[in-house]
Amino acid sequence: MVRRIRSLGGRLILVGLAVSAAGELVEGADRGRQPSSGDSAYFSRAEGAAEPVPVRSVEARPALAVEARPISASRRMGGEEPIEMPCEELVSCEIPWWAHRSGVWGELLYIRPGSTDIVYAIEQNDVVDNAFPTGPVGDVAIQGAMGFRVGFGVCLSECSSLVASYSYWSGDDSQQITRMGDNVLLSEIIHPSTITSGSQSLQANAAYDISFNTADLAHRSLIVGDDTFALNWSAGLRYGNLQQQFQHQQTISTATGLVTVDSKIDFDGFGLMFGVDGMTYSYRTGFYSYGKAMISMLAGEWKGAFRQQNQFPGGIVANNYEDFRITPQGELEVGLGWQNCSGNLRLSVGYLATGWFDSVTTRSYVDAVHAGNYTNVGETLTFSGLVTRVEFAF
Image (cartoon, rainbow, N blue to C red; front, top):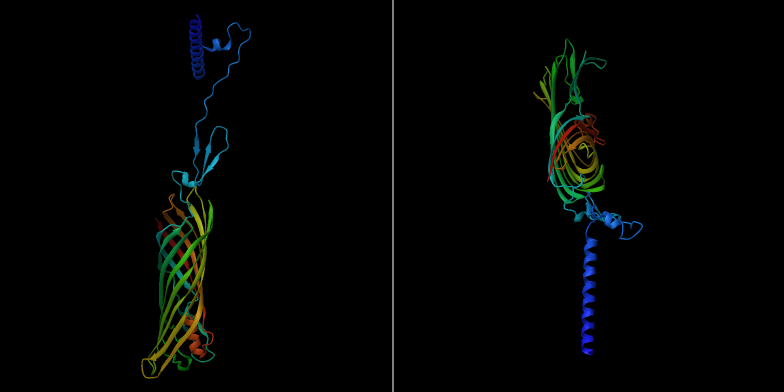
């Protein structure tokens, strides 16, 4: 009898556990199922209840969203605040427009020299001391001429690069003047001690040539850069060469015949350079404006040679000049340009002004030979004009 009671009690316990487990399964299934419109009445009013039972709506949680930005990204989860993500975690990052990149460029220079015009002959009514000019003047004035500048850059980092460039320009002019009526020509180039412009001085001519070469090697680095503005500095070395050649001839119907004067000036200098360049850029249009400023101190030797010779015997006037000095050189350039969206192509046009300070020019040297004073030989030689540039970046 006792055994039967124990067996019956064990079976009842097992049945109770099974019923409890089945209830939990049913309740879980009901929680996971979305109530339909047909079931709303069943859930809204409990059986035998006087008031409706409130229904709790079930909303799906928002999925994970990632907002991509050029420098960082934001992650949102539900109503939480965005979490900043570093640029390296994005699939790709845009290169800043101001970033230094390896590349090559070429420039066409159309410039004109200043402080170089030379008056070689003046027409007068006579050769006496109280003679007066009659108007025509013979002079050589070099007009605008073409030159070029080429270079390349090697990217060291996003904010620095190594830059090298070479530039060349050459210009020349030649003129001739013939006396009018009974007037005569007085040379401004022939040495005063051998003036031979007599009543038969009928014609004079001159030819003038100037050329320069520069080579730069510099380190360029970013000072500041943002979405619309960038400023860089450069420091390095510069080599500069400047050559001037001048020839004057005057026909004299006397014992001296044709008088020829040759002048040559050559300079080779090497020194330090420093510069800054800035740009303002528009993402919308791709256009930018720019400005550059550079100064260099070229230490080198100025060499000059003056030769005057007559067609017939009459002696030779000659002079050789040398002077070692530091010649400051400055450049300013402003302009407008455009670059494509990837930044690997740039086109620009600007205005350039360059000065070679304390330079030995042809006219200052000829005046020194005439006066016999070589203490302060020099003046500022300038070059100015248009610059067009094409640049390809890698």
